[in-house]
Amino acid sequence: MWSGPRNLSTALLRSWGSRPDAAVVDEPLYAAYLAATGLDHPGRDAVLASQPTEWQDVAATLSGPVPGAARIWYQKHMAHHLLPHVGREWLDHPSFRHAFLIRDPAAMVVSLDRVTPGPTLADTGLPQQVELFDRMAQRDGAAPPVIDAADVLRDPERLLRALCARLGVPFDPAMLSWAPGPRATDGVWAEHWYASVEASTGFAPPRPEAVEVPDRLAPLVADCQPLYDTLADHRLP
Image (spheres, rainbow, N blue to C red):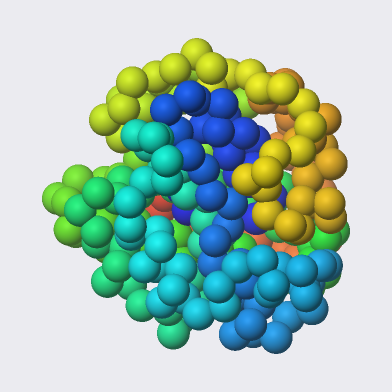
């Protein structure tokens, strides 16, 4: 699942992690991203110590056997972690099914700016999402599945059923709720970012996406909009 930041991605991680037939992994390229960029994110040292810092090592693991007795391996990725120097060929592994999680650009950018002031277009993950979407559509001869965070919140069961159908796996009602609290599968950064998810027991009620965009963020929202629209044209109904 390729998501941008502030896009409901951790709630979806909880959803898939509730399936008895699924293993999950949380942002496995994060340490490699921090090591390459030098960015000082909260908990940086702990993140670097918790994961491989070379993307090749991450790719080899993710392309390997599904952990334990699981049949599905749900891999939650932040698309902006896919830096230009990271190879793409491993993503064509025949067992991979790629999907994309998007959110209205104005709401996403304003939310992102609160936690990462002054974001850039690359920080939104949208260019990388469109790049991967085009790659997989060309490879497969069909558009990969796209889901919008607002649609998921409006009708979680319908969207998850549609997503599962497109991915070729059965829907499991266990995906609609989960126990509160942390998970061993959460990244070590959870203490900085996951308080709301840790308190949750399911998808939150729909939230209004109309926001007031400050003038300084308006150019970024404008740059995001056509990329979002490219993906949104293919979102599951």
